[in-house]
Length: 463
Image (cartoon, rainbow, N blue to C red; front, top):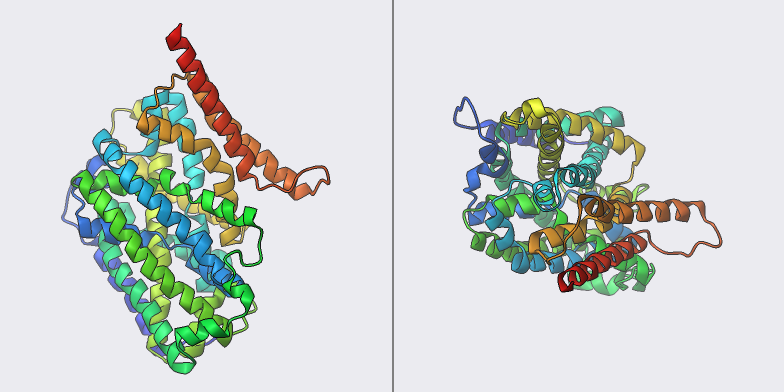
């Protein structure tokens, strides 16, 4: 694929404008951790909606791949479940999170279960919130467009997506998200418009698709699709959701903002789904992960192609900067700051900034180890979520369960261990081992532990 010089000007112009926006900040000699992590808890409703909506689509290339291969199934695994849990989050958790006035999810674990549990939870949250899948997406896209070696593409993706975060923290992310949200919608609007112009209307498109692409299961098992639904529980334990809800001026903004965000997600999901289905009639990609860029090269004239490529960059980068930031907070503040007693009275912002470098390096290594975006998300979610979700909900909602430090550690670690073993066994293809997704055994173990702790607490009260 060759890219026109006008398209290149648009792409490079986007990067220049993005950095200019990200680096604009009033001069401050020192910045508090609340200011750096939560933007001083001054986040408004428009800012909340814009930063949350734009952050959520880092796996856009995976969405294109899945839509090309399986049709409308994409909406049932990458969209609908997340609407459900976002609404649950809005109604059930936003007020609780804001009222706690706590800076991070590991702080919730630490306050409820002890320092050791706080650090252990931070380690698993660090893995769960890794920006590696999205850095891989951007690296693959840069490789596709400019034909540079993948390792250099990953390095470029990491640096250009996080450099402005180092200085401004959450405030810089929010400012750049305004631009990125406009671009993400504009780019797909243009792509769908030219696809329609060059073929048939979206209604005729639906009628021309094979039955396999109109099947909600997409030819996969019900168990597989349900696992993606449960992986959407990720929303509850997602550090970006927590950070945004803690950063608003009041809890009503978070509740209202989440419900508005679901409407924006629904609209954008319709756009990405339609574009993926248009790709099915326009192109035959060697690598389906490049479905959207290939459709762009096929139907868009110069100038409009550059705009669309910029929209893809914006979608992925708005996720990378947020995920890298919360990951840097986790490793810098929630792990090393808690462990290093000599730094316990210092402002942890300097450790968070150092954490950005560590996060970038680890993400590049993980991207090289598991070079599949969807597979990486699926694997990490299936293993980590069962161990964190119930202890986190218990810590937030206080179900009056008494646990010792050791019991809380086991409650987190046993389900994760069981899910990991289940994944390992499934890869070995033993005939005696049942065909079951690794998420289920781990989640079942967590429910068993929760029930035991609840019964044990009730029994002790009665005595």
